[in-house]
Length: 360
Image 1: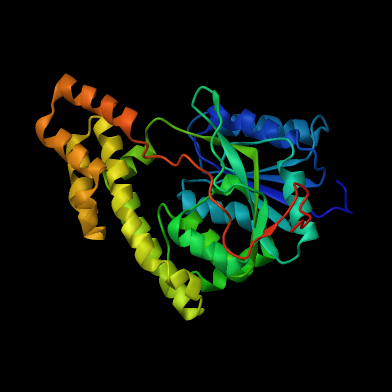
Image 2: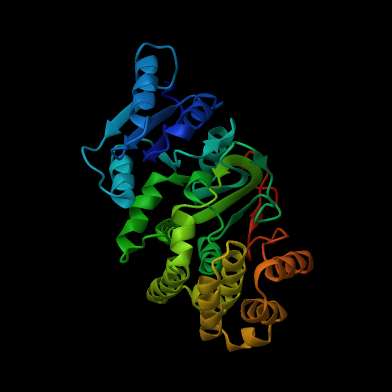
């Protein structure tokens, strides 16, 4: 361990992701930055996870691999939120990464993020771009959210978080002191949007940096929890709650850049409903798709004149079987519901190079 460099804690909560654990842990062992601690908290997994973790722990104890891997296991499943708090509580580093056990890091992730944080003491978190990997480890390149490397004033980035989550935890390195400070404003718990809420709160405390290089591999799953929450419409309702909670926090802190985004953020939920309706139709969940279309005008009545909305409404009510499939294929050729561009940074940003030095 190199004591001259700040310690980085990589905290990994795990439950039943034994299939992906080796890739995750190996990606940390390949990091070019030397001063890392790996902390894993297993939430009483029922697959081979714990056996794999014990294997890595033994190899690190015997000096075969570095850094040392510190393993903990819950006697019972305490839920994902509680498990994340447990693993965070064991972290001793100045900087912190929450890495999902099905994700992986590119070899320069830690080094690049530490460089930015060390050169810019006003920055509380660094977000990086990500590639995506499917369940068979096939890599898919994605479009960066922003079009350059930069540091944004905290309030300006918080205003962006009113509209979009931008990054998942595996894409982020946190200055732990800033996270601890931000927790004093945390007055609400979310089942799905908790990480998004945390990002907003940290941007209320400090500036935020972004690197457009893909330094993380984010796992995309074909079904399971994500689709189940979408079927129950939990995500869209939590998103609405999140916007209101963030707006209330912004009002308390007199962050007018955020409060000015409130109406636009709510209106955007109508377009999200259209996107979910399309996804549900593709998954043959017609009843759920219909519910999303019924909900959309609650957030924005003008969505009723949106051409995409009208076409999906027509499909649900007039197309069946193969005709519906053909209509969906035609829809996909004509419209792009996912993001196809990179955005400019928030106002008053400072551009940086890949090592974190301000260049404009």
